[in-house]
Image (tube, rainbow, N blue to C red; front, top):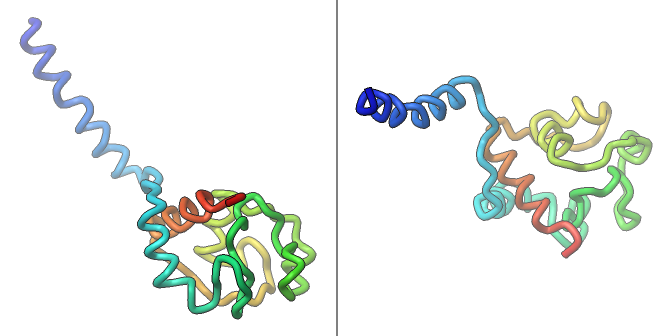
Amino acid sequence: MQTNLNRHTFWILPAAMLLAAALGAAPAKDAVRGRETFEKRCTGCHALDSIKAGPPLRNVYGRKAGKDAKFAYSDALRGSTVIWDEATLDRWLADTDSVVPDNEMPFRLGDPADRANIVAYLRQLAHK
């Protein structure tokens, strides 16, 4: 009996991991990959500490949307009540209009893992 129990126990963790993947478990968050993706996908319009076509993004995590005094935001972002956290940044990167309609950022990032990694990177930079 003990032998059968151990043999079955051995398969529980791998089976649980497969089930989580099949059910669409949240992607892993990797700030190092997030930095790489940020540099490839975001730096055309954003920098961490200076204004480009978009606002600087250091310390964006935890900040109210449209509130960096150095940047001229759209009326929609200036009037929003959004606070940038994991959920709002993920939704924003997937579809900006789902978070703040009539904003001026046309970018979309479809890959959930890329979004999670970028958010992890931005979170890591908060208050640095």
